[in-house]
Each structure stands twice: as structure tokens, then as C-alpha cells.
Amino acid sequence: MAESPLAAFAEEEEPSSPFWMATFSDMMTLLLTFFVMLVAMSTVEVKKFEEAMSYFTGKRGVMSEPGVMPGVMGIVGKQDVREQAREFEEIAREVQARGLAEAVDVDLTERGVRVTFVDSVAFAPGSVALESPAREVLRDVAAMATAAAAVEVEGHTDDVPISTSAYPSNWELSAARAAAVVRFLLDQPGALAPEHYMAAGYGEFQPRAPNDIPEGRARNRRITVLFRTADAEPASATVFPPTHVR
Image 1 (tube, rainbow, N blue to C red):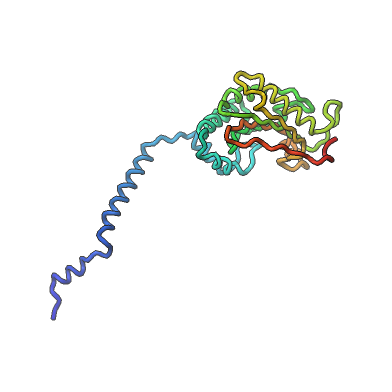
Image 2: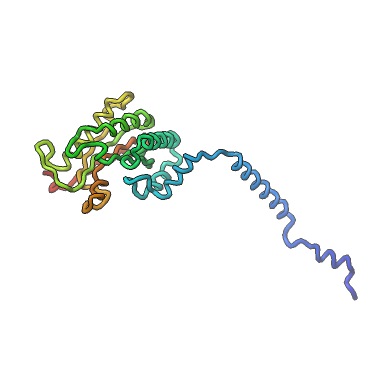
């Protein structure tokens, strides 16, 4: 017996998926359209976008090093992250404006904003007197870093020995330079109480590059100033073997 045309039509039109899928698909399409409209109406600040993308390379200048991105991810969700980001942008912009981007590196880390100076900008060879470029940058940074709860200053050198009446080793020289930076920051308007500052000298014992080439020694001679946030742990003291003390 021949199949009726109506039965054949009903068989052809029978849906291949449940009826609720049509409603669900419509809802998903509406949601997608809504979020696309939100993105389209938002304003993208090019400067902030470029700063954010720079973390994926982990490099911001000759003093930079890989591994910044994990630090930035570590501060997500903390109360003062927006204030840190604002200060970071202001400090980085100031360094660029002064033409010191090749000698001063600014990083946003999980413990706060970190500013690193090569020693040729901060000190004359064998001296602990702050040079003018470093003084100007530190003065501006101290005024901008209002979210800092403490300041940690570290002095580092290369492995070329020094032996003078004032500084019998690189360890003493690096510690004296860190202390000079702390003294300068304490003299600035709005400085924190003295107990919130720390100066540490590491000599040549924490190199960032090999000391067997001039470029590596230049990277190792540095002063690092960390404007630490309130919820970050203080730096732990480093004790060197007695053989390193002269």
C-alpha cells in the first residue's frame, strides 16, 4: 500500500533535536550579542594595553629579566592593586620622560613597585654620593609611591675586588650605597617613619648576569628600591658564609 503524502511530509519535518534547544540557542545568541555590545562600547586605553602586553615578554629594558608575569598575576585581587598599577604607570612614564629608560627599570611585582638603577646613573665609581639623575628620579618616585607601606633598598656590585680604607670589600660598598639611598628618601616630604625603611648590601653575591664580560658586570652593578605594599611579606635577612667577610 502506498504511503500517504501527509505521512511522508510529517516524517520529513520531524525535528532532529529537542524543542528546548531552539530556545536555548536563542538565549545564547542574545547573550553573545550583549557582551559584544559591551566590548564595542568600552574604551581601550592604548597606554595601559601596551603596559599589560609587555608583561608577556617579561622585558622592559636592559635591566629587565623574565618572570615578571607571575608577580603581576600574584597581586590580582589585592585591595591596592589599582593604586599600585597607577603608580607604576606614573613612575614608568617619568623615567621615559627623563630619557633614562635604558638605565632605570620599573617593574610591578607581587610585593610592590620596584625601581632598579644601574650604578653608573646612581653613583660614581667607588663613591656613595648619589648622582643627580638618580636623585631626581628618586625624589619623583618617593612622591608618587603613596601606596607604599615600607621601602626596601638593596645594593649590588660586580665581582671586581675593591679595597680602600673606607670600603675594604664590595659588601661594605654596596651596603653604604643602600644606606645612602635610604637617607635620601628619609629627607623627602611625606617620608615614612624610619622603622619602615631597610637597607641591605649584597656585594657581588647575587649577580643577575655573568661577571666574565663587561656587559654582565654592568648589569650586576645596581641599586634596587622596592616600594613594598602593606600585605607583602618583608624581605628576609641574607647571611653569607663567614669566608665572604673580610
